[in-house]
Amino acid sequence: MSYRKLFEVRPGSVVALSEIDSDFTGKHRDKAAAAVQMKRDDLRLGDLQYLLYAEHQRSLLIVLQGMDASGKDGTIRHVFGALDPQGARVHAFKQPSREEADHDFLWRAHIYAPAKGELVIFNRSHYEDVLIVRVHDLVPEPVWSKRFELINEFERNLALAGTTILKFYLHITAEDQGKRFEKRLDDPTRQWKISQADYTERAYFKQYIRAYEDVLNKTSTAYAPWFVIPSRRKWFRNLAVSKIVVETLKSFDMKFPPPAVDIGEIRRKFHAAEAKEDGVTV
Image (cartoon, rainbow, N blue to C red; front, side):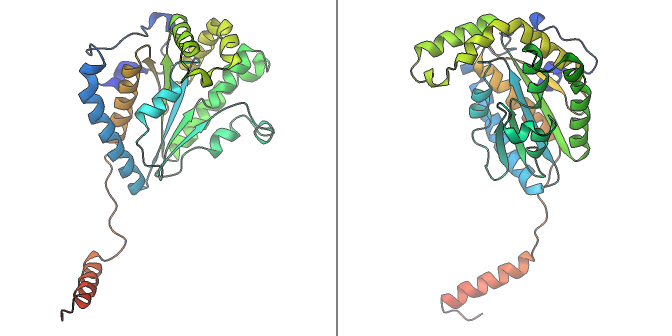
């Protein structure tokens, strides 16, 4: 089963998030049943990211979006935690700084986009500028409504430059979110994550869902597709994201570059130096 095909929002389709089961786990009964596959995918992802860095011909941008408590941080920790930091970065998009606000809304996304050989994860992203600004009426509709086309062109430009883009919407319901917020309140190891905004923003859940549906319907393209990932079960969320990333990296058919030096000559010099140190004439 191709997880890409299963969860991809096909360009031109119409997404209704209320019709998507956040508790979907496919053929997997539980976390234990999927554990072997998850371990195999984790190892494969590490190998492929190393090859992406070594080949240095293309890049991968992963966008994570979702409601508060949908699991963006958890996905980064569990799916991408073992990546080689030489070729991987995470950038979290928060309220724009003064410098960022003085530029166009896509400026801060472009400066953090991946270079060749890099895998970059956006924890939230440039899509906040058609989400929170819309829900809270921070800019007028004639302004934010034009941003969909600008975002598509921005992502197309990255794709033409050799960046593959995968965008994941981590799908939970209002009920799922409420249960997770309640667990945070009762768990001392998670209370540090609580902010007042989490609970005030919950009142706008339906408005955010409508905004996200517009995002999914208007900005899922062949060069930068969206994937709606059922995320009530954290283990399945991690498995699905991992499999799509692995499937995509495998499709690159990457190869290690040839050595930049004469390996035979280096080998001869190395062996000669070792022999000399051991007192052997060569």
